[in-house]
Image (cartoon, rainbow, N blue to C red; front, side):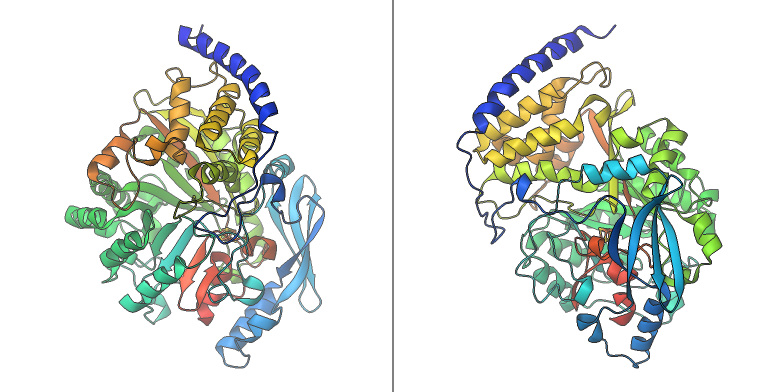
Length: 579
Ligand code: SF4
């Protein structure tokens, strides 16, 4: 037996289904053309105007020969090859085929000089297919970006990105081994000056479409840069609402006053390096009580209003058994953690020399992640509850239409390739800790189609919000949602996340804009329901590199030489070393 309200809501869903048929029929009449918002020089895209890279299999793509690429990089570093060749030549490039064999998806490629390479892209073909099938398409072409996006075949071409990464320093307060960014080991210090930091942030808002994005200060350990707090403050000042630090947490654990100062400067998220639960799982970093340090950092940050995102690199057979324990840690702390980021290993830096045997044993794909989560926690059906991160684009497109032409920034949108990133949303009752994947009680694929139909009509706010509400109601199954969850909670959650109604946009649920106060933070946190997002971002390496992914990258690295795809910067030809 369900609670009586659940039966009422079931009836409402059926009624909404009928109302939707009428609404959708009328909405097809006299649809409005797309407008050009202030934040773009090109019109918003209708869902049917969006382009997609070639998907499905077998398919051919442009990749790299691991050996040619390493040799070319070394030749540039030794001054034997001109760096400008990268702008005009396809350095190290070979064709690759993505195909199915023995129930797995593989990338296979042959270099005329160095022979055959192959690697696993997925261990579950249905999962891989599902991700590609629900991909909604690329974002608006990047424009006004000629000076900042100019990296030959590595150039980012679509959208604005969603996480702008700025390495403040390569110095670190730890001695991990290996860590190829650390000045303690590479023997030189690379640190941005205050003028450099201002320049990359000023440049960042010149690219169109100008979208909200997360600005992530990284390193090394960014908190030991003398400019850390000023950089956070400046990123907020130029207009970015979500400023983050990718940190090991030590400085925040040591000093609550530092956590407070960072929060006051505008730090919104700490991307906290997290290897597992307990000190033993962190021992390889050579700090005996590192897990205790993490807990202290979480406490100091959270109490000052900064949200925490544990970030975990996963290596198959090394720490993938930690996946379930880390998710359980988040489920046990629903007030403090609403985002988890898993990053399957990418064989970069010294690991580029990995033997084929070790690579085969340690390769971990997004499909491994979905299966480990299910097997270790019982949460989530791989093809029902996991979606490409870009799936959210249907909802952010709707918000862009609803907010109208006068908005200064477009919505943050993750238009990355479906092979790049995935996520599962879990609704958690902060009081009882009951946790249910959102897509267990919300028909996400139909919802996305409905919402795209609403956006394509290009109506004003009232009809757009009405259409969204009807599609949420008709796709909601009250019998499968958490026990205390109500339909109105679902409507509020979407309104809070996307600012659909005018009052939500003005901060009804707590503002997220640069002017936000402590009371805004507390208001947003007062919600009974935690929408935990479990994400997987699979950075590429030379063995699975795909230029169709790089050209729609959502994680641009801000450098003195423009904004470069994270994968092209850290792997690929490796602009990090070259710059
Ligand atoms: S960083 Fe790499 S994996 Fe992530 S979106 Fe960019 S290209 Fe894809």
